Amino acid sequence: MGRVTQARRITTVRIRDGRLHRGRKGDHLAVEEPLDIRLNGQPLSMTMRTPGHDTELVHGLLHAEGRITAREDIAEARYCDGAVVEDGSGYARNTYNVMDFTTRRPQLLPVLAREFVTSSACGVCGAASIEDVRRKGRFALAQDWTTTPRALFAAQRAFDAEQTIFRRTGGIHGAALVTPRGEVLVQREDVGRHNAVDKVIGWALLQDMLPLSDLMLLVSSRAGFEIVQKAYMAGIPLLACVSAASSLAVDTADEVGMTLIGFLRGADGGGADGGGADGASAGDGRMNVYTHPDRLDLSDAE
Image (tube, rainbow, N blue to C red; front, side, top):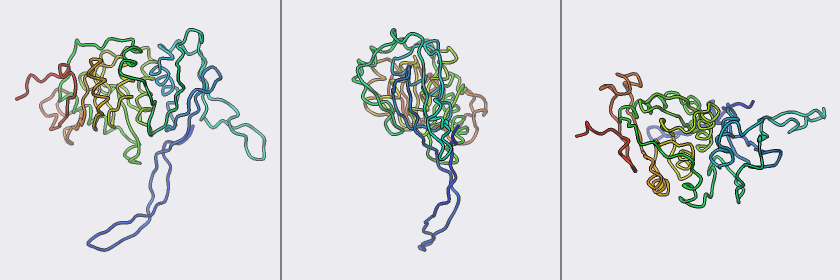
């Protein structure tokens, strides 16, 4: 399996007190490698990703595209042998960059009219419309629970503390599934923000947890249309991001009944254990609630 970070010597340039300085130091880069995804032996998609949790990634991607609905739809997932031939030896070497997924009943799977190509920049692109998302969705979004601002701030701080690859590289995205009390169940990192989401949803699918009607999705990036689409396909009622939300993401979340929160920032200090997720010492923070604020308990708000 490939590395998730790569060490490199770099030149640094700074200006201090009006004087130009140069230097050398060690740095860590987020590894970006291709993953060639094949379905029943046929090429399906090429995505750029950070190696690791590839099985979860592809399960989440196939679910978001409507090609599978449960883990039982996949009979086998394997890395393909012989992807590269060693120089001089003639022996095959597995680079762990090609995966083939075999379905149990290929003839019963939905056939999409388009092929899709993914990358760390754009993820799964080109879904036709909000109506297309509604048509593909299988789950009604739950309306029977609420969360609190303090729980969300505590979750964001705990989430940030566990972004280990981001702290080393500054070039990685994260996603997590969180309970309404602010407890992080699973967290993944990837050079592609869509890949990180696919990994946590793929993890849940492999645990037979879908629909995720009693969980929230927290992402370290902005919330675009595709992130809302993936959350809706998994039955997630609340999506929170630490950055901005796009206009189409807001329109889609509003239409499907999803709570969408942006600029979720829990202040440093106190931590996730500072009085508990609902404790009074959870610290300062801020957020923008774009759609369906009814899932947020604001009864104590002034």
